[in-house]
Image 1 (spheres, rainbow, N blue to C red):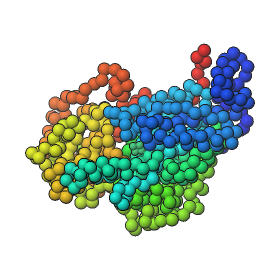
Image 2 (cartoon, protein in one colour; image 1 turned 180 degrees about the vertical axis):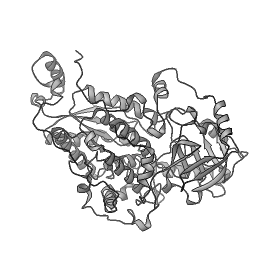
Image 3 (cartoon, protein in one colour; image 1 turned 60 degrees about the vertical axis):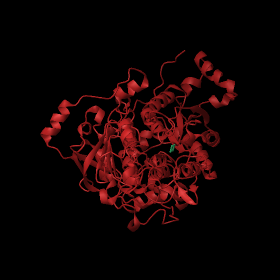
Image 4 (cartoon, protein in one colour; image 1 turned 45 degrees about the horizontal axis):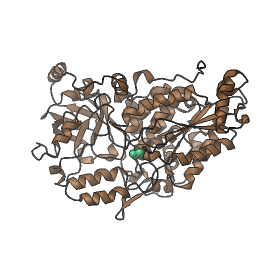
Length: 580
Ligand code: FES
């Protein structure tokens, strides 16, 4: 840790708008006063933008409009001036074609809101899957002092006395309906039981994973990730976060001080320990690209290999975020990494302390939720990076969510050219498929879908499910929901729509998956593969205009984070010319 706090007091960037008695300053300040702000709030104290992703169409964040009051209290208490700013909110459950297409748009919009307005520091109020990475990407690109507070997970769901997890049980129940084991009426009854309180998904899905990543990166106060949305301690966390950002501005503690290579390695190892979502791979690569840290897919495989998955949460395990919080939450997991020499202890956090200082005294209160190493869900829990002639730039697989008996598998390809082709064929009893086959889905990557939807864990055909089979090897260039499970090879790069080898797989080809040797191989000759690639023609529709065109034209591959090429890097937050 080499951070040295800046001298205080000093002139802050907000004073370019609010300080002095010129016409422009009176214009900026005077209009603000129509909200009843006293004159002394403009006296040079830190102006904190509370970037709020509240939206009634982002149900996981719909309580942030209440939580924000606690953040404001904390900022006032510490001598700052809070200003709440609504920002682009990409809802996982409602945005089409997929929220992922809008992660970069949100990041771009928020970056400009941070840079173009009088803010000295920011509180990022997030929760649902894409809201967390998009705001972290924006903060990394402006490098204004920033801190995350998430909305927290929903309370446990229960259906007929059975613990049910967001997403995870949606997939399970829908497969049960297809297999004839559950009625449509029972499915509808289960629906309400899954979402019984405010908050984000209560499994270790992408939202909980990204909240954990923010904490493991050092961008949130310790303990933030697991506190349930409706627990009073979530409100305390919001208030403490508000207090902390004011001091961060005074100290000039910026994202670039926290988001170091060491911080990303801590986050990757944490992701392995919690059995986190494969979506974290894409998001952390994108955040690293914004702050200028050289992070690669190989780093994911290298750092995750020695880390056991010790958090017994769905979809890999049994419990939900509420129990994780009661057991000690993420600090107890990070402490275990530190005790196993798997943590850069000296990594700086937004608290101003090191990561180790934050966690060294915490206690694990339930070793059935946070497991001892001997009972780990997977001894090598890190995201596996597969390579081979089918994925020259890589594909990923989550071992803790996969079936051990399928980790080495050779099977006949059953190909779906796109998601519509899959939907049209999967329920057809005449489809030539059994459980030994490898399901291949194309054209669902960043350019192809477009946006890289969470369709990689495609449901199995009913005739296989009726045999009691619940998993098959599946390969695609899509993503998978963090709440899902299965032996699923995802993010295959280059994607089919960009002419990757996935595009030329044919029905009947043999495919070999070898997880221990990190291999994904299409068993045809090099000459045959080259001939097929030479004959390949792009098939996906191109958009003529609008954001979809911008996305399709500029999005990069999943192997580097699927950011837009022109948004990578840190542009800082210089104060531009006055617009009046
Ligand atoms: Fe919003 Fe899961 S859909 S957190």
